[in-house]
Length: 247
Image (cartoon, rainbow, N blue to C red):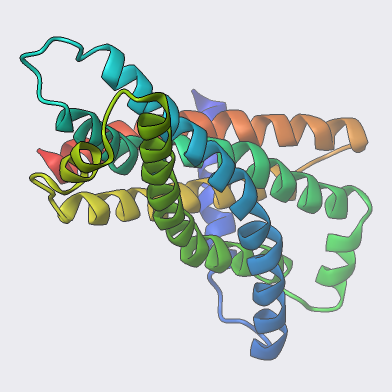
């Protein structure tokens, strides 16, 4: 328990350093643009592919579980829409990003720590925590919600393709289900969750990498811890945010 509280205190101290006033805004801007590509654009492909197939699977499973003639066919489209918007596009996508983006952040900063690049920045009078972590936070907080919207669109499209091609639902019924009783707040709810999850992934992964002590073996362990801790916190805050935002 003492170790947990100690680590939590160090984490908040690191965040205080991260959000300190930047020394040179132009350098931070260039670094942030780099992170947009490295952490944001490079994740578009995997999110799009997984969203498409997840939407397809949700549609087929919903169809096979609502074969009773009492259930109208448009429920397939409605189920696909709500499942993707409420859970997949934010929570499941964030778990995927925790594995891809989180491990990259932890290994990059951890490697800089063990090769003494961070020490060199400190000697030059640079706030290394802010310079290395703040651009990553800004990039993920802005771009991850865009990935959520992409996931929603591609996931629903994947559900439509699978439903129509497999013959379990007509295009008209699926589209009617997507439009039926639509609540726009669900998208806001999904975006809020993704912003919180983006902060968790980036800050926790950066924390694990920033305080690596040792060599390449410890960097690998830090990457693993970053993914595990981020995933657990995502699931925890998913429950908390769902209770706060939907109750």
